[in-house]
Image (cartoon, rainbow, N blue to C red):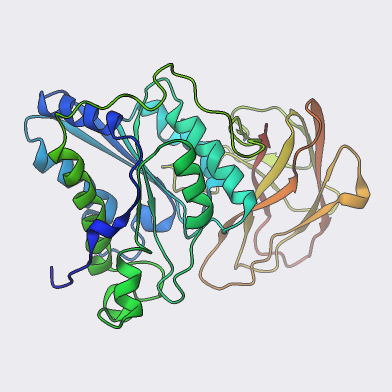
Length: 374
């Protein structure tokens, strides 16, 4: 590798290494382990020339090469354009059900550096680290290569609260760009998504950190929360138990909306298992036990497309517009709108109605899911 980044600076929170050491010991003994990666488009492998040059796959390869006596499985649960708010609602179905032994989580460039995403991120961490399969969790923060921004400040608060190791591209790759030792164009075509060189650098920061842990594999380290109980949340923690309602696990009242019954090819076939509507006045309504509501829908570059409105508990003055027309041009977007937060616990009525349709609509309005959080 022609770049000489200071990977030792990547460890911005040491955290507790017990679970990662235990995972390495099992692999050393020849036991099968599963490595899983949850994040956005960079984790998915966007702009890598092939799946095998994505940082996630390169980290998986480190596990294979380090422990050739073990069968190592690989699960990439990255979905482009998604945040920890969506992550906490999907982590069970997309990753935890496979009982990962090692789990890397990354949402630092899709989350904003706000208290809202501190709370959604905490929900994701609690749901993941507290899972019965007891995964060894490593947190990683990518960075925007044009301005050095990410959600690291908020995410780091959670890492420290849960004694989880965290590595940072802001502390390793970004300084080299800022000082002119790396030209941005050499590692990223768009100042966000790494090319193969960039993915290799990201993987190097992570695997060098794993090497540090491996060097101490036989040093005993107590589990961070030996009694199995996670610490008291540092936020209101209204997202840990988020549930994503689609047509396979809910029975909303339909008045013009139609369920999409086409099979989903994989988790990145994102516009599936929802509902479509094409006429003004079409409605769909849910009764959901929750304290917060978010709506996922398609914003399409194929225009025009219908516009909808969502109302919770009949409060029309707080209605939120769901405009299916996307202002960007890079492709259809899986968009998420937060409708309500921190409501009183209990059943809440969610009604979505098409308020604007056109004779020349190219595609229908697509409701992907309603997410209830608590």
